[in-house]
Image (cartoon, rainbow, N blue to C red; front, side, top):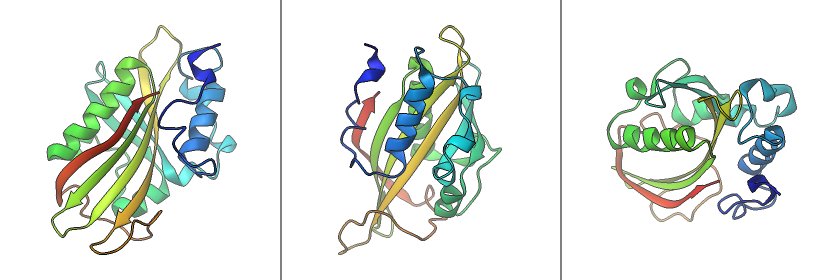
Length: 190
């Protein structure tokens, strides 16, 4: 029995029909086989067409100290109001948001384990956004460094006086610039 045989906390808390994070986790686990994590060549977009708009790939550079967005799904581009493909984390994000993301990416790359994170963001205009993230390492073999991260995000937006809603359909082009509070709701190494 491997560590991958049981669904970890974080993933197990998601609804059984959750359409993005749970299927991506299950696909990644299947592609691990008997390794700690799969290689990039083990991930075939043809296998997961429904997930593609919600996922991205991040290049891990210089001992997990710098991260470049290799590919960002169309749904993520819509939500953020910008396509970050080709940009470095430290060039495209700033402040506490950049530090927060850097720490999540570095943890997944360093520990060679997936990370599930649920985070509440507060904004100047009193909106609140909850982001559920799944960050999964990719490496050629168990001895080689993690060279990429496969990730997916899902979003819940709450406006003042509104109940929490499961998803939203409008862009948030000022996501990072207007953050006044970042609060971890859940954080699990997988």
